[in-house]
Image (cartoon, rainbow, N blue to C red; front, top):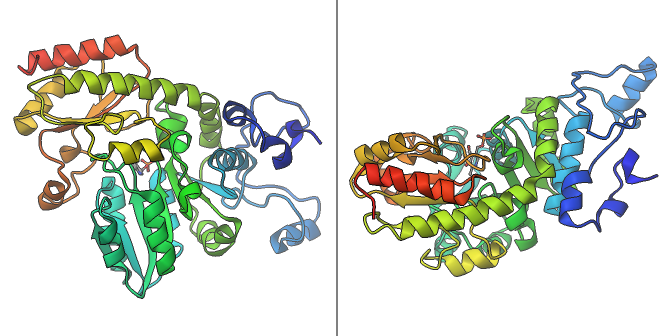
Length: 407
Ligand SMILES: Cc1ncc(COP(=O)(O)O)c(C=O)c1O
């Protein structure tokens, strides 16, 4: 059977990346549609009562209910797994649903989780607030400090969690080294790979056990829908992930799965252009004498540039941060002076977006926690899109000039 009519990994595994992004996981109905179908159905009808019983018993292949599986979701999951080099994948309703499921499914009261402290605000909330509520101990470490990871290990440590690059500090964690520490401790490693995308960084190859995405970001990449994904081994899926997902239901909408499949078709083209534009924008901002530090993993002045280049295929990503000297009022004035770049807290979008993390994505952290991470009142995060880089730089330049920060 050709790949055209069903999943067939033996054919798809040798395809190059752009081909996989377009075609891996495609499943065609008997109508032969070229664009993947949206199976917008909650349930499935059976020929006979015995078929229903057999499907529930797992002795007959087939779908039973879309909280458990859905063909549009299955196509997306297969494509994501092929890109990541994972045995399997499950799509979720949002990135946070993926992060929560990947951690919660495997811990119980009395367990211990170690996490890098530089995290997206909601990820930090899970570590700081949700897990302790259920008697799961947590330790936050400076993810850049390998000794801190090793020192944090306890006999009950079950999970390491990290983002690299982290949102919004752009701290880099040495994923392979942290995975070695976790392995020695008998803990699993969950990596939130949102900032790097599966194109720049593949944590499973570095020893991670589970990779999570907000597919809302680069994978949709056009500001249309929310989604998430968990990539892991078949064994982890079978137990503990699948029972958690089936019974708690953080399921992806099939419509969103279809949008995300369309997004994947152009992911490599978009990410390549966005990263090239981000490098240009970072150089432009770094050359502005009145701005404080610009952080971009692709620039040599990023303190972990060498590690970032090693882990991210020599590319710095599409997101950068910089600091204005006079705090929130000046940061807001700069945002308000932008004529093209949108004020928006999303990332990975085709449109360039800028946000003030202290008052948006990281507002939920205490002021002390933000200060410890270097998320100051003057920090701005820029997610670079697909506009012509000269237009982006012109917009940044005119906004800087308007608030007295022009060169
Ligand atoms: C690093 C990171 N992880 C997870 C999420 C959560 O994703 P979602 O908004 O799709 O729930 C985000 C952004 O929102 C993020 O930046």
